[in-house]
Length: 93
Image 1 (cartoon, rainbow, N blue to C red):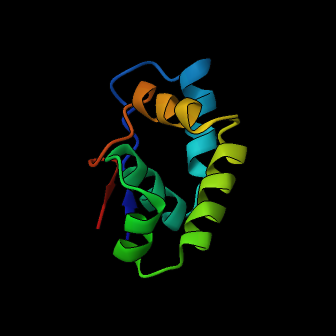
Image 2 (cartoon, rainbow, N blue to C red):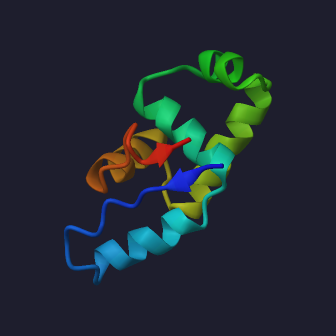
């Protein structure tokens, strides 16, 4: 079982925070795991090996993440994740 931990409870959830929370809630478990690995600086190859999936599948998850979070580049995706404090504590098994 995976529990998503949203770090928004410390702040008033309005405007940008509410928008981000809604976007994050739309992510699948696999997408969140890929995002976490990206934040660690892992390559597609390493993410694929850790998750026991193909590199192509990792690319698909990255594309879905970027579309769902409205990011045009990987830099924007990482920036979004950092801005809303999505890190290793974001997901717990």
